[in-house]
Image (cartoon, rainbow, N blue to C red; front, top):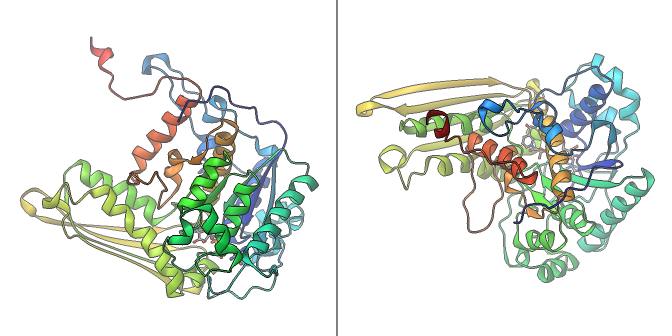
Length: 437
Ligand SMILES: NC(=O)c1ccc[n+]([C@@H]2O[C@H](COP(=O)([O-])OP(=O)(O)OC[C@H]3O[C@@H](n4cnc5c(N)ncnc54)[C@H](O)[C@@H]3O)[C@@H](O)[C@H]2O)c1
């Protein structure tokens, strides 16, 4: 990829469209509005709070990221979405139970104004939901056309300059890439013949790319991670990314596993279990949706630890991930990890992690950052898979000939070096030999 010669300025308004107006997306909308009111701080958002070192350490040039690259301002964001339930964003936020009544009261009017458009939905792909607010169409292609029309109408009605779309809807059942996903002609034919391999999330991704709207997938569904849509995105000059927001347990995993590998400590086993009681938990109670999530959560360790290179340390380690739906906890998930490691002479040790996290509080700033960075990438002429945004994903998409990079610190370095590269700043290697000459 060539370095962007110019980056178009973020003039006008940016629409953030989310298929799914549940816990994550309403926490994002409420949060951005609270921040705009000056009632909250954007904790957890790299685009809002992060800094970036430029040049040598002695130069003391450490601007905020948002001062280095031209990002859309929070004041210019407009939210919209689709859901299988007709609840406005206020009702959905109250049901999700993430934010307390005091915070919601400050943004009630704003949230009430955000009403979901009818969803492209099929219960065969999300067994534990019964949607009432859904589109009708003879074929999947018709549904995709309706989503395209929604996008155009939303843009016109809100006088938007640009749009991005982030999938914040439920996790669909597990699908593997097959023949109809390989090229656009087969994909379009499959939409027209209602082929079962075309999930609703793919219709949103297809519609977004067709309308020149960058798309990211916050769930582990296959969605845009298929050659047909990847190539389509490239041909339409649209940036895409995915999959599955990296929030609680996997965030910890991709911090701890690199530390073990860095110190050449071995691993016998890693058992991860969770309890959560939100709608996401209910959806994941279905074995089909859980399988999609499980695959996404299992990948990280294999790629980070590279057992094929370090068989003495990581051959045959046992890795298990469980998710248990437990309604009393709502969105306040608890994730436990029991890690059996071994050290010098093979002596065993154990580490226990008990993360009492808040799922949507961790996810909302990720959605904001992805929206702003995808818009930046688009204005910079970058297209196709944006691997530099792997930092935000449990199961990062990358070029077919590569393996995904899961190590959080390598991901952060890649993200920051990409920002430096975009604006023609020197890349940072951390060599530092010049200080000792
Ligand atoms: N919160 C986290 O930490 C986290 C981390 C990684 C991934 N995710 C994923 O993000 C997604 C959103 O999570 P959430 O907690 O907001 O879930 P949620 O259940 O609260 O919200 C999802 C919403 O999507 C709607 N929906 C389902 N299918 C749809 C369709 N085809 N079109 C439009 N709307 C549809 C549902 O009705 C629901 O309101 C889930 O897939 C979840 O697995 C969340």
